Amino acid sequence: MKAMVLAAGRGERMRPITDHIPKPLVPVAGKPLIAYHLEALARAGVRDVVINLAYRGAQIREALQDGSRFGLRIRYSDEGPEPIETGGGLFKALPLLGADPFIVVNGDIWTDFDLATLPPLDESAHARLVMVPNPPHVARGDFAFDGDYIIESDKDRFTYSGIGVFSPDFFHGCQPGKFPL
Image 1 (cartoon, one colour):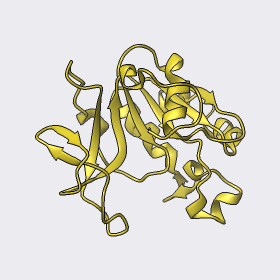
Image 2 (spheres, one colour):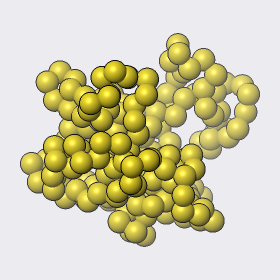
Image 3 (tube, helix red, strand yellow):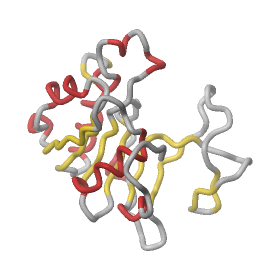
Image 4 (cartoon, helix red, strand yellow):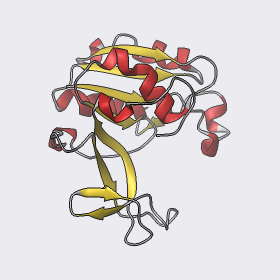
């Protein structure tokens, strides 16, 4: 299975730190945040990773290079100077990700989630999202559950963690450009 790490954003809420460094390269306990994700992906058996780039993308490319020090092969999807949001970035990277389902991890989150435990997609789903209880600063949440399915509802909502498995079919009908997931 391949994976994509989303790393193109500016990190506005972390300014002024992110004025000079992209958020995925902000050090946490002595190493860049994105390094934890790459190590977790390697532990989960992933070998091919795509990282999208926009804001200060050259710094990310320079820091991670080809990924061999993580036991990975990293390829980059360059969005240009302005990020095209999560959906646009994933859609642009589909040719690098191939025809099979792939893992997605937001490059600017902290998690100890074991990526090896992500269940595979079955024919009834185009995506599986890891949902978490709402943190205090996100009282409303993103989605609710109906059994194993994520639905739109105003009751009993959870927050999308920034981790999931997606089929390329999830993006059927999308057009190139800037759009949210």
